[in-house]
Amino acid sequence: MGEWMTLWFMSIALGMDAFSIGLGMGMLSLRLTQIMKIGITIGLFHMLMPLGGMTIGKEISVHFGGIAAIVGGILLVILGLTMIRSSFSKEDEPFVRPIGFGLLVFALSASLDSFSVGLSLGIYGAKTWMTIFMFGMMSMLLTWCGLMMGKKVQKWLGSYSEALGGCILLAFGVKILFPF
Image (tube, rainbow, N blue to C red; front, top):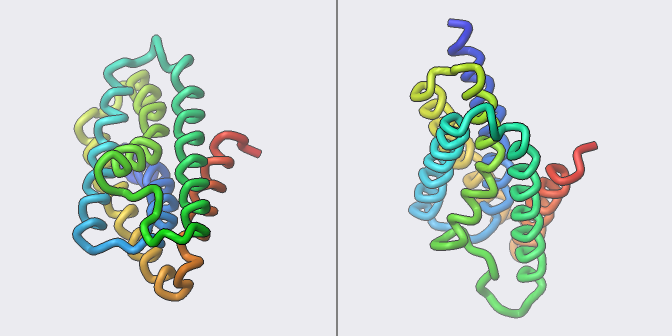
């Protein structure tokens, strides 16, 4: 029972970044089918990244832990800045959309920290399949929650919602790059 609880809390902690990013991206005008695809993609990335980390294991964890956080932070800063910039442009279509390649960048930036966690869990010999399943499911659910909440906020804020969403992503990226 103790291992389940630990993994449950860890999966919530890892999924909270997906929730925060989903909240920011949810302020774009997204259809429910897009929201479903985004949640599933984030969930899959939150399964694949720790699995990759767990298989690589102890030898590389010292070197990749900081690199993964830096790359994730940079991606979030770029996404946030482009959303803010596009909110002030006269075009209706935002520069970054969570579809196609943009969805892959979005999913990668949300799940890079789970790679580092996977490296650590590989050292301790955690049960691989149970761990990655819980990470994926919780991240998917929390992403959906963030996207749906962002969608509601978008209706209240109108055209300013994309700038606010960009600010959230930017702040989250800066927090990762410069932890206080």
